[in-house]
Image (cartoon, rainbow, N blue to C red; front, side, top):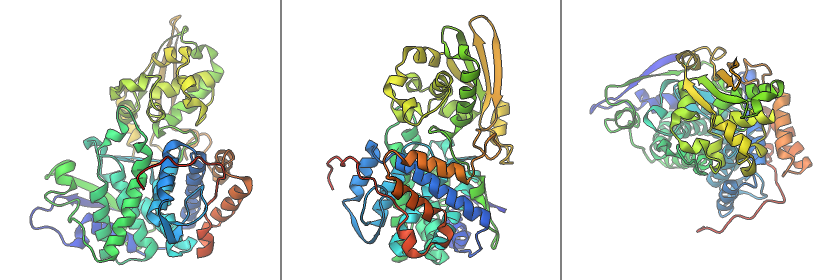
Length: 497
């Protein structure tokens, strides 16, 4: 890897190949072989995406997105998970991307910026199906997309300026599509510029009352990237330099005209391995809550008195800056303590999550968020005794350059009514590669079977798994069958289309 300095270029501009968009395009065009362990992880991530999508097919936002997609038939077209038929590639990406993101239950990468790089897979799969491409091409494309999104997340913070993280997702999808379609670097660079320009939005979608747009946002970025590639392939140019221009992203939206960012990128011929630094979720909640759920489940089972608000005076969770201000009491969001809050808000409320995991000794993607569960009086009482505080040591561990030392948990100090103080800490989730039970292929397969069972017939689920586990060797017809139907889905509400 080499650190590339990215800064505002001034009026003189930069040659396309020296712009960040050009450098990312060169990565997309590099024909380096995919390493076997990377290909295996691509398979895991495909199964993981499909698992959480299958569990969300009857939720309202996913139903709405699918209804929009089914208004756009495509030839040859792409599959919409849950529905038979073939549909326009960008709309299939929209529907499937929304389904993947709905439950906040798939993979994550956290550094200077945060990312759910599994969001790149639905648009790449949709285009592979539409274009009639095989599994090897799709694996290469996913590898590129993960590399680009994770490298941008390592080097360039968006949240510090209240920009939503999907602004790194859209160029990653555009780059992955460049690899998938074997496009020349200049074309990919133009597509990246288009994708960044139309996908940059504020983080209000993750602040205060969190709405269903949280699920739509990455799907919008993937759809926009497909359309950006289509325009670039037709010879259309993009705003440039998109990052380095005088009125570009760095100068006007990020740290300003004097800023310098250092983005690590693989050298020509260097294997793309960034996907190996991402990690999935065992629980349906914001990633920074994963370790806390594991700790709370254990403590709730071992120390039943911790579940009784009459016996607990206060719980303080000492953690990283990001955890404190995004999902903790440092956010200043009263909605994080509101029993009437949306599901999307509750899965970004660490005090709520810890209260429920303590009392139940378990976590469920549906039951743990049920309105009746959030309104239980003893839960509300315990919930409001929980707060977070930033601890500089945990913030430093959150940013540790070694992915196996990086930590996303913290230290819990629990003061009981009798004056007893209990102190427990956890660094990473059990399912993390450095955790107590790292996820392996059987865990991904089990997650898919468990989450798909409610809506997807068993034979459909098993047929999908049989193909997904052979992804690198699938021919174009088999890639086209990487889907599943669900016969009892609700009809989409009426809209304009």
